[in-house]
Each structure stands twice: as structure tokens, then as C-alpha cells.
Length: 73
Image 1 (cartoon, rainbow, N blue to C red):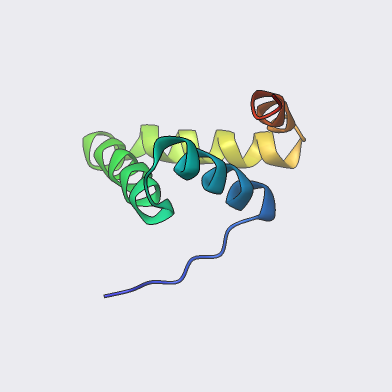
Image 2 (cartoon, rainbow, N blue to C red):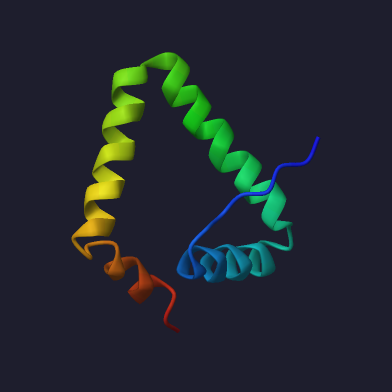
């Protein structure tokens, strides 16, 4: 089964860069990220929700812009 996801342009660019650097596919990285989240969720749903909320809040406050600095070479 295939699923289409909607990602921000900034996330897509990061995903493309990492996939290229690691000689892997964007789908494999996405699958790995989701697997990690599933492990968190099934281990402790409250922690998984807390992480999701913190990331959402950081994005809303522009705090994730610092990640862009990691991608500058």
C-alpha cells in the first residue's frame, strides 16, 4: 500500500539532502522516522504526544529555524 504525505518544503529539502548523503531513499528515512515514533508511542503514548507538541510549538515559534544552520556547509 502506498500513502501520500504532505511535508513542508523545508522538510523535503532536508530529507532530500540526507537521502543523498546516505545513499538511501527518502521513503526509507521516512519509514525509519515513523518506526522510531511508533516505538515511542507504544512505549509511552504520553511521551510521544509531548514530543509532538514540543515540535509543533517550536515550529510555531520559529525555533526550528536553527536546524537550518546544520544544513549550511
